[in-house]
Length: 217
Ligand SMILES: C[S@@+](CC[C@H](N)C(=O)[O-])C[C@H]1O[C@@H](n2cnc3c(N)ncnc32)[C@H](O)[C@@H]1O
Image 1 (spheres, rainbow, N blue to C red):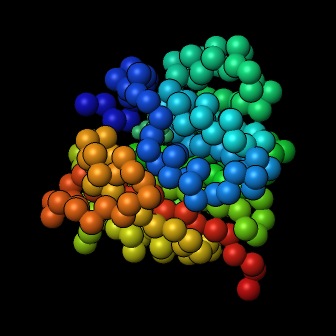
Image 2 (spheres, rainbow, N blue to C red):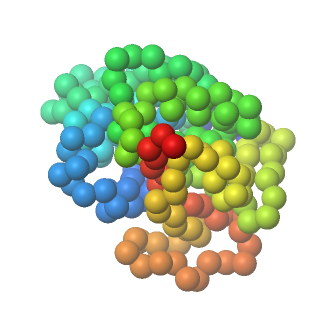
């Protein structure tokens, strides 16, 4: 399976619905606040998350390596009622997000696992450049491993919570939730219920974490 070919990923998953993790974010951030936010998602896939977010945010910007995905998303944007606040850019991360917009929330949605530690580090410096000051957020959802980091031959990295805490050490962890397989586990359909029924096998564990930029100290 070509994990590093974005077009292949897109062809396999073009019909996926939006991720649960976006619903979770919408539950955490009050709607009035959200309506003032510029949001960007890194690695948008078919754009389902960003199209949902556009209903709640001031501006929603997607960055994606698959040119096929970007073309399809652009076609949808062109006829979308919220087209003024939607934008898609075809880039391969790590990438400097150099436009005049500053973001209140940057989303790493099942994106981190596709980047190496070095790429992730580079992207973090680019991401921090475009965050909109104190109080803005990085929201990440990804695979998680309990004890040690791993990287498969296909280039899939699973990292520990400790890794992410250190990686985003400039930020403060505001909210963390562990999930047991976001597609099949009925328990997490109700996101207000903490999933206490996690399997002992963390192979399919996933997490969502909301980090907030702190005051300079
Ligand atoms: C697992 S999908 C996640 C899609 C969406 N964020 C979600 O939560 O459903 C990862 C996406 O990142 C894209 N991608 C992979 N490597 C990338 C890179 N280096 N730069 C930008 N996008 C990348 C893939 O094409 C794919 O659309």
